Amino acid sequence: MIFRQVAAFLLASILCCWAFPAQAFDYAPPVSFSNAELTGQDFSGQTLRQAEFSNANMQLTNFANADLRGVAFSGSVLTGANLHGTDLTNALIDQANLTNADLSDAILEQAVLLRSIFRGTDITGADFSYAILDGSQIRELCQRASGVNSKTGVATRDSLGCR
Image (cartoon, rainbow, N blue to C red; front, side):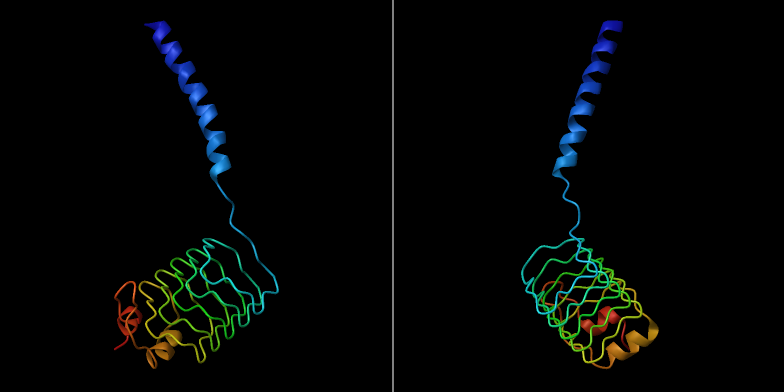
């Protein structure tokens, strides 16, 4: 009986110590573009989950149809950026400048968008379900909210809670 317990303990110890380092090699750390100059770059169609773009200059950058779930765009400049069809679920887009950006058909579910600027931003078909926005942002976006997201089937006005 004691031999079996000792053998089981040793086997578990060997497997435990052997399995964890293998898992560490499977983990790719998030990509960081913080404080970068990315004006006019093309990231369209790329998978950039949980990438860090804080305080980056991304004017006229193309992210069309990219997988940007969990990215951080905190304090970034995205004026004129193409974010059409992007998945920005759980993204942190606080204090970002999205003036004249294209967010049409984007998914922004559970994104944090506090104190971001949306002047002239195209939000046709964007899904803001459960996103965190300031009251003034919601009022501004509701004035031009229209369309239905092609992937989620949610109307932009409904996702913003427009009356």
